[in-house]
Amino acid sequence: MSGSENHRPIRRRTFVIGSAAAAGSAALAGPLAAPAAAAAFGYTDDGSNYVVDTGANLVFKVSKSTGDLTSLAYRGTEYQGYGGMNSHIESGLGSSTVTITQSGSTILISVTHGTLKHYYAARSGENNVYLWTNKADTSVSATRYIVRVKAGLFLNDEPDSYTYTTSTIEASDVFAKSDGQTRSKHYSKLRVIDYNYIGWTTGSVGLWIVRSNHEKASGGPFYRSLLRHQSADGGGLYEILYYGQNQTEEQRFGLQGPYVIAFTDGGAPSSSLFPGTLTTSWADSLGISGYVATSGRGRVAGVGITGRNTAHPYTVGLANSAAQYWGSARSSDGYFSITGVLPGTYTLTVHKSELAVYSTQVTVSAGGTTTLNSIAIPSSNDPGNASAIWRINDWTGTPSGFKNADLMTYAHPSDVRAAAWTGNVVIGSGSETSAFPCYIWKDVNSGLLVYFKLTAAQAAAAHTLRIGVTTAYANGRPQVVVNDTWTSAIPSPPTQPSTRSLTNGSYRGNNYTFTYSVPASAWLTDTSQYNVLKINVVSGSGTTSYLSAGTSIDAIDLLA
Figure (cartoon, rainbow, N blue to C red):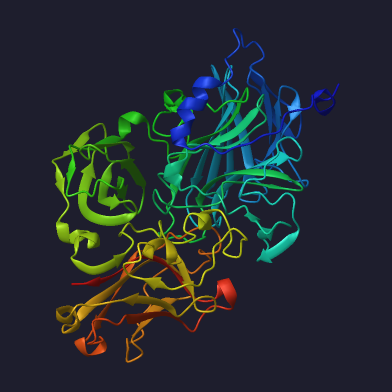
């Protein structure tokens, strides 16, 4: 019988698991155990493809002419392909030079397309495909690998799916269901730091991509991009390294990997495949272009971080033009350790949530550990430490806490679940943050009002108003009016990504603080009355509605 004929009905369920859930799920179900003997391990040539049998339950094929993954058969069922398309780098490289070698228990397929090199590796007795991609320049536009999966094998109605709708509400990639909920492949919910793998499970079969360490990616630990999708044609799982959507950094070049296509018996992939845990000493001598073994890498360790606001998590990042890394600071004392770092000099940045509050330079050497004494964050580096008459939200570099903020990482602003984008705020009401919308657009809710009272002494003095933003679309930026008598100048737009952001699940751009020096003459002298702050969004760019000029808010305060 063919694989499809032999495929029994499956209980269709699916989920995305981040790093925190991974260990628990793996402990319950775990990866498939390697068979006692892997006698079938090896490869053949069918004329068009190299056919690799891992000696476990996985057989895959790679085109000899293009380097596409043309077949991915697990337990006799074909999973690869939809719409006549294969799994591949980008949308397919086209004509390439493809070679294969076997060295003991490892098979390596090498693909060369111009300056780009790509690799597939199989290990005897494993249900995994290991992949590396070495992108040397911009001759290939973005950097992604997509595993295309046949329709009907997994069912997904998560935010990153658009299986059951044909109602397009934005571009060609955001859709509305009949109940008013929105779906898009962009709506992953997750930042890179939040997940180790992505995929689906039926309960008896799991198909996953375990991400690489993203050392050659761009955007840092808080970057969001599409991770998977389901459509009427089938599903897609992605490893995104540079996509050109809402990017805050130039792309990096060089070898990235391994990332892993992993099959399991329905549970999570083994934690031994996770970035930071995976060891590939077996690949050290394979001749992979740009490969640097563990012995050629270093480590950065910090004994602690003082001056933290312990209500928030802290992340330490390393970045230069060639590579990026990050690690979480321990909540008790701020200790951190970042391993597997390529030699070089890096900017080390400490983030309070997603807000940069400290930076310095560190140099990493091969085989060495750069140990840092306790890092002291100056009080003035955290805007949340400034004395304020009133403050809406804490300064975290995110809109978290504002109205609709969480929903916007997995839905379109027009989604039926979104609370009204309009509405005014009264300081002292106790609901200032939850009542204030996370995003403001010129064509949707510009002109939001904040009501507040001042004491006689406060009203007699000039004050600085601050509005922190996390990104902007079409140069949207805030101009303020106080009591309809004083209007600020229109501020210059800070540098922000030029692509969509607020409507495709990401608020991550370049954090920026607008400051306004409000003269004492702008305040009401009657302390029983409310002063009124109006916040407008101004810009000559953008179109209409949610694609008009807009910005994402981090915090707003009036300094004492």
